[in-house]
Length: 186
Length: 186
Image 1 (cartoon, rainbow over the protein chains, first blue to last red):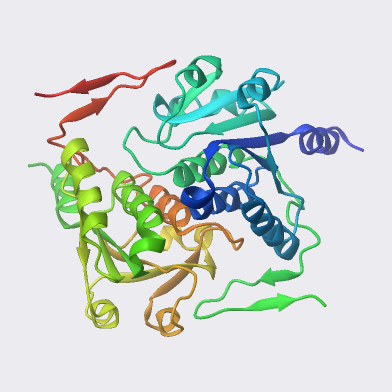
Image 2: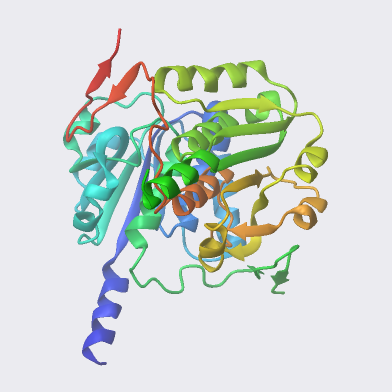
């Protein structure tokens, strides 16, 4: 293996980006958190952890998409989010409209290969701001945790080489100018 | 006014980006479409039109955010979306996971100053693919209309000079490393 290949291999091997969604509520957040999880998956995160109410329907729904469209992304429930954040070994990035603008920090953040991206709902406990290594905003206007997460991941992974993230899919979408082209494997 | 200033002035004056959300359902889509509208606003679209069920609570909620955080973004209901799309003068861009990848079209799209960005929900009528000038995907993996719209707008406006989009706000968020800094005007 040549130098550059080895470097790429190591980057792929040790890169891990997780998302933690705080305070899931079964009825209220089911659709929005499904969109959040799918955005996490589509923009190359490895896993979504969530706290709040355990929601098997939500987990199953996301896992079904992974089974159909490939990869190993999954959703996992955690009971004690504070403990989880404290014991996480990589850098903890809290996405909030009150944080530092992403454009001023993205270069620094790209240096880290293990991230926990924390997203809250409407009310985030104040200690999250303290225990996070970074509080980052994707514009300081209000929008959505779904768009904030997708934008963050898109910028973070922009020039990193990530391959085979959606392997073993049962379905493949082929870009089409005026309709749908779907290839299904048997 | 010098040549470049005049050019900038004209670009700002005539640039108009609208979003059309198809098929809003009051109870089911209230939260998700609020996030969609806020993402449209935060990422510099001028207005969100929506079809489906008229929802005054949804409209009021978004308009309240505009009043608080500034600018002139608003939400408007339309009854006949097909007629609306057909009579729109600018370019019509349908965001769909089945479309052409944004990276292959964004340079071309940046040339147009008047866009209607069409986003559907789960089921989009087939004729939308035909009457749109572009069917564009922001990854061909499933995620969310909220993340697709935000990513599209972020890339479209990336190097355009847009000023004073959030003027006359009652509240201003100042980036903070470890907490919240909010300035309120009286």
